[in-house]
Length: 166
Image (cartoon, rainbow, N blue to C red; front, top):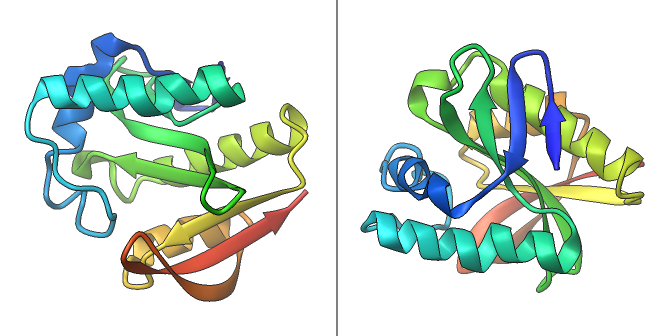
């Protein structure tokens, strides 16, 4: 799976992405508004890639992907859809390195992901879960067309739940 936008490529993760994935997910500022714990090393990052996005591709045919800046080839984060078994919902998410915040790239990636979910996967609805204090991500979800529906507790945290229907 490769999704292309004006500035980004979203492609499936491979084990060789572990170093870039570790760099993203060991940054306390990047993780400030997410429930994930900070990664400790590249090997842990590799195992998470194998157990989560790579396993999701096999099981569901889609999953979060590496977000590549086309102009440089740099991996700047991740974006995409994930089936959340505990909620029986498909969630759109994005996570970028700080140097790329505020440039509209998360919105670009989220829009491409939602379009893919509806056009290629035939989904009827997609959700977005965001910690209410994460104003920048709330704006991305809203610009992507998702609408707030409720506040809910998941994974020991409080999230605002947003939804978009096909």
